Length: 252
Image (cartoon, rainbow, N blue to C red; front, side, top):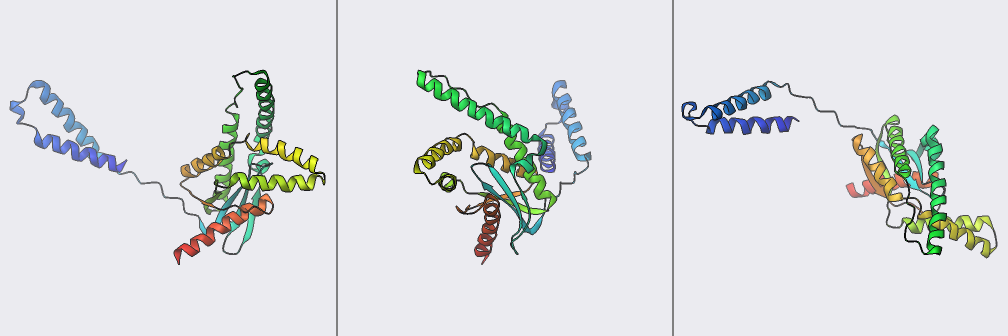
C-alpha cells in the first residue's frame, strides 16, 4: 500500500510539473489539473500504514505432514533438535465436528466409483464427477493444520515430496494386505481395491490447500522425503526431522 502511494505521488507530481501555464489551458484542462492536485494532496496527507509483522515461530519446532491410504493426512508437531514429539493429530482430530463431512465425501467417492464402473460396462460416456465437498474438506484440514502450528508456535510446515507418492502408498497397501491374510488371493483382492481408493483422493489438491492456508498465515512450507516404513505418526515425525537435517547440511 505504501509503495503504491509513493508511486502515485511521484506520477502526479511529474504530471503537474509538465503541465503548461494554466492561462494557456482550456477550462476542461484546468479542471483536470485541479482534480489531479486534489488527489496529490490527499495522497500526501494519508498516514503511513504500519505493515503487519511477519509470523515468526520457534526455529526448533516444525509441523511434519505425512500422506496415507486410510487417513489422507497425519500431522506431528516436533522439536526437531531433540526429536521430541509435542503432539500428533489424525484426520478425525483435525476436523473435529466436521469429521462427518470427511465420511460423507468418502461415501460419495464409493458411490461415484460404482456408477462409473456401471457406465463403463454399458458404454456410457458420461461419468459422475466428485462434488466440491472434497475441496472443502481439504481447506478445513489445511486451516486446522495451520492453527495447530500457530498453537505450538512452529516455524514452518514440512510436506512430503509427491514424486514417489504412489510408490509409498503401494508399499502401505502391500503391508496391509500381508497383515490381513496369509492367502495370496485375499491379499491380491485387498490390494486391488486399495489401489482404486488411491485414485479417489486428490493428494495434490490436499497439499495445495495446506500451502494456501500457510501462505495466508505468512508461514513457510517446505518438502522432505516421506519414509516408506513406519506408522503414519512416525512418518510425519520423520518428515519434519528430515527437513531439519537437510537445513543443517545445506548451511554447512
